[in-house]
Picture 1 (cartoon, rainbow, N blue to C red):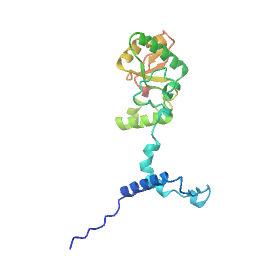
Picture 2: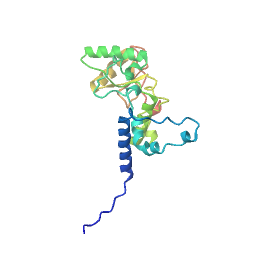
Picture 3: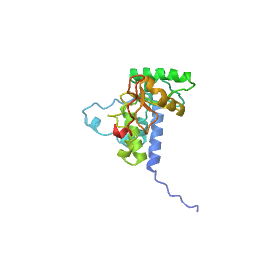
Picture 4: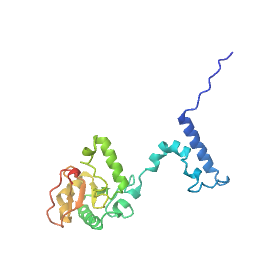
Length: 213
């Protein structure tokens, strides 16, 4: 007689995948299938946690937290300049900082240099995620703070800081940015500029790092 096969018990992963497929099929046919009304607030059923949602939370949470341009994230394959007002990373910058950077960009272009905005305004959520990532990278909140400020202290969140690139633009800004009042804020971040001086005046000394701000 052929050997009998022992039925395998479904794993949690298989159950989750099956559930997602079922939900997708249900969404595709929702136009023809009546949907039961949601439980009203205050009822015992409505106050109970949704077991399905709790089961899928570990899979869905990364997508719920995904950043977008609305958080100041710069779209992929986009070379951003100080004049790109359709992107929140630029549009939400302090107007005086943005104007100074636009003027500097015109002067740099005359020298054959393109100043690219690599990071500008950021949402609180975006800044917190960067700080969390830096903590994981550098091993401690204290070390991470040398490179990424807290949302409460970040001048990116307040729209008063901009990061520029590439390297030739950083060099140009280091030499001529002060003509527009744009100064390198931190010694360890040659890309980070703020409007901290009057045009043509001497920039204040750069701080060692963001932790000393």
